[in-house]
Image (cartoon, rainbow over all chains, first blue to last red; front, side):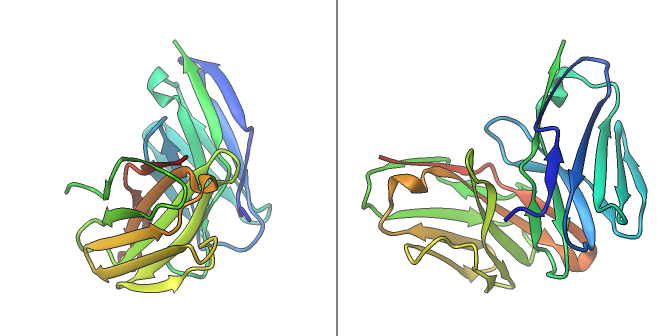
Length: 111
Length: 115
């Protein structure tokens, strides 16, 4: 069973707009990560936030984590056509290294 | 670094045949993961290794699936006999969590089609 559930399942925006997607999970975590998958490719790690952190930035990415609500959000600012991809959240728990992935959010950015 | 290497990239086989997928993790990484991705079930963890030892194989669908890691730089996932429902993209990933880097590095995947 999947630990993380992303919302929305799909998102269509225009270049320059911001894209926000959410992830909810069920059990306690050690860290939460976001990955991107371009069509036909493997997943690429974007950003990791630890359970004792509330917000993290990396370039145009901003991730928040609310452990009381068991939820996280990924914000992509000033989106570009190259941001078109599926985005997955993944949670890490007690088992070192093991992650549980959500079903993903498919983002389409049109020029 | 070349990243995680998987071979073959595409495999088409007939039902009942044996299929072997190969993975070379990033040098120095001590965790290796095998995933399967389908539209219906998403990304599923099949098995993972730590220092070449299988730690959790609870995701392996059935006895037709087996995985080995004979050394730190090579792992195989074998399906024997293959069935059409095994058609999926199989990913290998590696990580080095002891360094604080819990992120996983994925290979390009092997697209398996069983007819």
